[in-house]
Length: 159
Length: 159
Picture 1 (cartoon, each protein chain N blue to C red):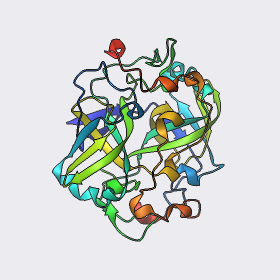
Picture 2: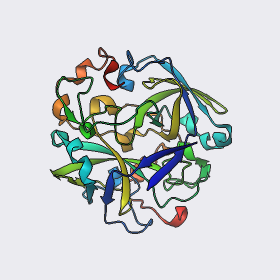
Picture 3: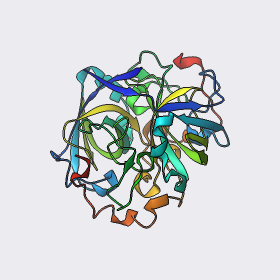
């Protein structure tokens, strides 16, 4: 049984190809993108300008098929796909936190984009540190590897 | 054009009704739930046990229709739905961060569940503070209101 969603808009970014992309929004400092919400949803943005950051939930639309074991960008060993943020997932859903620059009618300019150009947007939620930040140092295979987040870019492995 | 996903498993929680539920996982301390992943995806959990927290991305399956303006649980005024975490959204997708207690084959016991019993699961991603925590104090209409997160429960407004 399928669960059906419809794009609520489109995320425009500088990234036309799957390679040489930032691998997380924390690795995309200063990189700007534009969200064009479908006009019929514009009213849903009321008061969003009070927040500095938002979650974007989107369809990894160029991710065809999936693997249960993947070698992620930050490692040379295989891990279960649910223990990674790799894009080839049974349900190709991406989440990123980006910074709001401006909101004008149905257009949101943001900073920190790490998704492909023309990515279909599924949802926007306000980021609230009191809800969304969690402190833990138990990060499995990523221990000692997150420092490379701003250096390593995507490559062709998930074509 | 629809974007189609399929449930990868089910989240079991103590919550059979939409009222009297925690309104965020931060308001669900000590509340345990069980994720039953479909067996064919079990291999995708490899190495997840190294992490303490995970994102659950799920279908708010009892959320029928949506409103662009909503009065959220933590306020008495209307806001755009995308400036809230209210469940009645154009695409009813929920995200929660929960703590892993145990993983045995395709079953994950977790703590901090804030979703309905038998919620269809769409994705699991490891929570990584270095990727996912953002510091900001600009939280719009929620300013001064997040302190009520552990006191206020859901009610019938989104039936």
